[in-house]
Structure formats: C-alpha cells, structure tokens
Amino acid sequence: MLLLIAWRNIWRNFKRSGIIIVSIAFGIWAGVFTIALSLGMVNQMVEDALRTYISHIQIHKPGFRQRREVKLVIPAGREIAAQLGQAPSVQGAAPRSVVAGMAGSPTSTNGVQIIGIDPQAEAKVTDISERLIDGEYFESSKRNQAVIGKKLAERLNLRVGSKIVLTAPMPSGEIGAGAFKVVGIYKTSTSMYDETTVFVNIQEADRIFVLSGGIHEIAVVMHNIDQADSLTTALRSQFPDLEIFGWKDISPELAMMTEMMDQSLLIIMIIILLALVFGITNTMLMGVLERTRELGILMALGLKNGKVFVMILWETILLSLVGGAVGILAGIVTNALCRRTGIDFSLFAEGLEAFGMAAIVYPAMHTRHYIIVSVLVILTAVIAAIYPGIKAMRLKPVEAIRTY
Amino acid sequence: MSVIRLQNISKIYQDHGLPVRALDDVSLEIEAGEFTTIVGPSGSGKSTLLNIISGLDSPTSGQVFVEERQLDKLKSCELVNLRLHRIGFVFQAYNLIPVLTAQENVEFIMLLQGQPKIEREKRARELLDAVGLGDQMRRRPTELSGGQQQRVAVARALASMPAFVLADEPTANLDSAAAENLLTIMERLNHEKGMTFIFSTHDQRVVKRAHRIITLEDGRIASDVKADPH
Image (cartoon, rainbow over all chains, first blue to last red; front, top):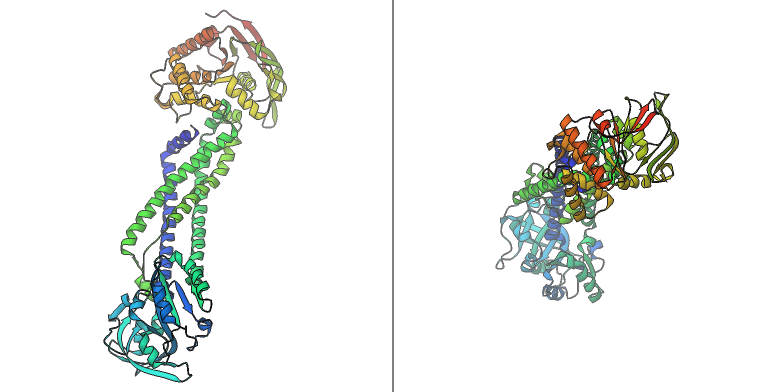
C-alpha cells in the first residue's frame, strides 16, 4: 500500500509533478539521443575502417607491419588465403601484395601504398568495389588497371581513363615502375586513405615489382566479428611462423575509441542526471513540507521512520521512472526516425572525413545502453530521495501535527 | 486493572525561552471500558495530556503507564508498536490519508500491523458498516462530508483493535446532527464491545454522554467526577 500511496501522491499536485516529469523526460531524451548519435558516428567509423581497409584479421610475415619491407612475403600465402576462404565462419580471405611507392601523373606525384589485390576475393573482404564514384571495378579482360581514391585523383589531376605511373622498390632493391590506366575512382569516409591508396591487380603488381608470386598480407573478414578472436588464436597455433592479429591489435586506437566512447557517454548521462537530481529533490522536498502534518499523523498512527523513508523513496522512484520512461521512449522514436534517413552533417563533411567519419550519421544504440540509462534513472531517484526522505523520517509527529 | 495510569505528570514547554507549564502534577487512572471526557478551557493542557498518554510527547517529570508498561522505559520502536497495536486515534481534523479510499484508510493500520489482505478487507468492511458507511467504502475523503470523514476516522481508530481510543475534540468540526450521530456510534461501541474512549473536548454534547468528567484548569486536575450520562 506504501507503493499505492506513493503513486497516488505523485498525481496530487499534477502541475508540479508534470513539470519535473517533463524535465526528466527531456533530459533523458537528450542523453539518449546524444548517446545514439555518438555511438552511430563511432560505430560507422569502426565499420567503415574494418570494411574498407583493416578487415577483422590480418596475417603477415613477422616484421612486415613495422618495417613494410617488400621482401617479407608470406610463403604459400595464396594457398593459405584460399584455404581460409573455405572456412564456414569466414566471409572472405583476400591475398594482397603491399608496396610503398610513388604515384605520378603529368602534373604531380604523391606517396602512396600500392595494394595488389585479387578483385574477386577482395570484394568479399572490402567494400571498395561498392564505393566507386566514377568508372568501374577491375575488368578481367583489360591489363594494367588501377583504382584510385578521389583525393588522389584530385591531387594528381586524374580522371577515369587517365594514365598513372606507379614506382616502388622491388625485393632486389631496384626500383620497379609501371604505367596504369585509371579505371575507377572510389571515395571512402577517410580522406587520408583515399589520398594514399592505389589498388592494382595482384598479378600485375607481382610482374612489375617482381614479387615472384609472394604476397605480403592476407585480410580475413568473418561472418560474425565476435568470432575473430577465436580464429586468431586458432591460426596462431596453426601458423606459428606468421604474425596474426585481430582488428583490435591492428588498430588499437579504434578499439580504444569504442571503449572510451562508452565511458564518455556514461559520464555525459551522469552529468545530465546529476543536474536533474536537484530538480527532483526540490520537488520531493516541497511535497514533504506540504504534507508535514499528514506524515506526522501517519507516524502517530504507527508508521515507522524507515517506512516513511521508503514511501518517499518509492514516490521519487516512480516520479523519475515516469519521466525516464517518457524520455527513453521519445529517444527510441527519435533514433528510429533518424536511422531511416540518417542525419546529414554534409556541412562538416571535410572535417569529419579527416577523422574517418561519414557525413551522414545513423544513430545507433544497443539494448544494454537503454538498460544502463534505466538503471541510472533509478539511481538518480534514490540519490534525489535521500534528503527529503531523511527530512520526512526525522519529523516529530507531535510537532508535525501541532505546527502544520 | 487500569489501562492508563499517570503518576505526578508535569510538562513544561519552552516558549521563546520562557517556561510554560502545560501540566502540573497530574495523576489519574483510567479503567478499561470507561467513556471519559477531559474538559477545560483552551490552554488547560487537554491535548498535551492526550499526547503524553499516547507517547507522542514525553512528560518533563512523572511516569505514564499504559497497560502497566512504563512509557519512558520503552524504546522508540516499541513506542511506535504500542501506538500501532494498543491505541486508536481520532483527531479533530479527521486527518485521513487523502489519496486512499475510506476502505483503504481503515485497512492501512491493519496493513502496518501485518494483517493478511483478506482479514483486512473483511474487518474494514465490518467497521465501515458499523459506522454506517458500508456504501461509501470506495470514496476518497474529499468525496465525503466532515461527519462521514470523522466516522471513517473512528473506524480507522478501531481497526487496530486498540486497548483504548484517544479522541481529540472529535466533534469540533461537525454540525449537530453529525456530532450526535458520531457520538451515538462511539457510545454503542463502548456499550457493546467495551471499548474505552477518552475524549478531550469543549463540546457539551460529548460531556453529557460521558461516564466520567475530568476537568483541567491551568494544567491541574480541578475535578474528576463520575457522571450519569443523559
């Protein structure tokens, strides 16, 4: 019945309760939307990075990641990639040759990473083929094709059909060079990547830079990213002579950003709720002061101090939960609506792309975040109830009845 | 056996730093089944006396015994339990819980006592029937007249099956008909169930029905007489 009394007490002063409920709802909605927006940005950034260039697992010859020496090839790399591609948990495994070199056009040059790919295998691992803004992906009938990023095209003043000269050191130490025709121009959400990455056919990279069939990297993408860790462990024991890393090791800054984002958003939510604590406490305090006589009567009749506190606590929790539920629901609806079309930050596209972020953001929020917000709302209510609750339980019935 | 025994009770308040003697060496005993009124002018100490009997207030000196338990020896939680289980209260301003219905108000005391729901509902219905409000059980206090609210308060006071009921000016806010009706109910409960009632009042209608009239003046018992109720 204490719960019933608490619930009905909330609605005794509809206007006052309504104002604080709206405040709580607005605060929670703002928090939920901010969380969803931030998580959407980071999730997209991570997904883009994984789908564009990192993949879930990378395999190299030891030392290649640090030194990028062209002679550090994986023995029987293509066979390993083909074998991995057959594994049921693996979506795709692509062999790559990776050489650092220069890209030149009649007007300019630029330092680039020349990645030799098997176009079909690569399409299962990265989404470069889907990110073309001009031209087309590799055509099997033509030779010396190159797919370059938009930023590089702008820098070197290249268009689809233009010639591009790629030069890079060979394992022998000499410089190899080849002329390619730009067949496609892609654009990712990371402008730096677009400026420094050129894709060519792995056979041609092998021929021009005399790699003798060797590859430098195998990129693996899982059907389910959560299985990457277990496959990494299994591959390490299967190929002890190779360096095998999961995406969190390859790009610790991305992993850290994901974790930090969770903590930062928690802090933002706590700050919002702390601000609400004062409003809720004030409302509850007014309620207690207004009902001093009534509380005194209840205590005179035999309601123990502890139960008086519990009654105020219930009232605060229910009040906060109503506001919290409205706020969370409004947040869910807003997120769902914004997820349909995305929120367009094109005005800031250049700045966002420098950080690898897309200009259109799709808010995303996991169930666990909603649960965390709900728990925080209850915690807020408990904190907000402490002062009015203590004030109520310290009332002296005889004084409360006589004075008020 | 006396249900209430006061020995040399004095109560001194501090009012703006000045001592005010509300009760001065009051001693009395009240037996089970009495229908007693405490009368006296405003400020004579009637309400203070009731507060001290109920343990809501403590005397400056002297001892209070309720069913031979000395109140100043009880811990605060024991005092709360004593009020909950052995004392019924009827206040001048009814003081029902506004968010609860008449039935829920009556049940509330039994809930605090830990009685099961079925028992609570049955007894609340019986008590509200007894005070003539069997058909108003679902109404909240604001939907009832003053007289009806005070009858709910009487039912609430009796719900805990107390040893006695303390009624502080219960008819002060009622019109004549409502007051007579309420007094008849309480008188009947006194006759039929042997319930002990102690009133503080100015109301002559209450005094006329009392079996014992204790008159307070300046915090002292000026007279304590048995009476033949009219």
